[in-house]
Image 1 (cartoon, helix red, strand yellow):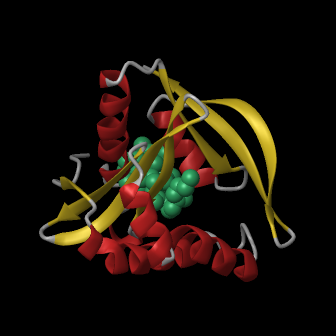
Image 2 (cartoon, rainbow, N blue to C red):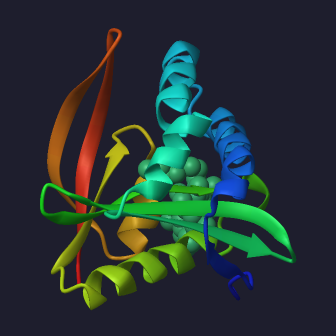
Amino acid sequence: MNSLNIQIRPVTPPDVPAISALAREIWQATYPGIITQEQIDFMLEQRYGHERLYDDLEDADMWLDQAFHDGRRVGFAFSQLHAGEFKLDKLYIHPDVQRQGVGGQLIAHVAARAAKLGYPCVILAVNKRNDKAIASYRKYGFAVRDSIVDDIGHGFVMDDFVMEKKL
Ligand SMILES: CC(C)(COP(=O)(O)OP(=O)(O)OC[C@H]1O[C@@H](n2cnc3c(N)ncnc32)[C@H](O)[C@@H]1OP(=O)(O)O)[C@@H](O)C(=O)NCCC(=O)NCCS
């Protein structure tokens, strides 16, 4: 299947409200059944609150990329340096355009950046029950490296696989 034609652009401060709203829309389509609504609301506020996103944009070790198709914002990928490694920290594609190669193109974009900076691999963490995402990461060359349970406060944990794609 041909991939959807997308443009990838850096997120800028005026994009913050739209990124935050897009995250909520995609999370609500993804995580019910995987984590509780309370945890979804907590994590959205913690990670996609406007102030948090403005702070991320100021962080020299973070890259926030967004994808557009026909002028419509359809997804985003955030990457960062994390404990000396290059991490794909967030990858979210609108349900209307999932499984049309947008995620693959954003992964390639992020992997090219990591390679250019000299990192040997890209890592990520994915919920162990997020089967579709795990399948897509495998398709793009990631393999499970570790299994972690991370306490994120307020009684919530992240029960994740750490996956790694060698460059
Ligand atoms: C996971 C995600 C980022 C993949 O991006 P995408 O643009 O949909 O994926 P691509 O088209 O590049 O790759 C397709 C592969 O992803 C997997 N996949 C994506 N959507 C799927 C679905 N609905 N059912 C089954 N597999 C799916 C498959 O492995 C598929 O390969 P195939 O079509 O050859 O079987 C995207 O579907 C998404 O945002 N999902 C919801 C949010 C999420 O879980 N994000 C990851 C958090 S760690």
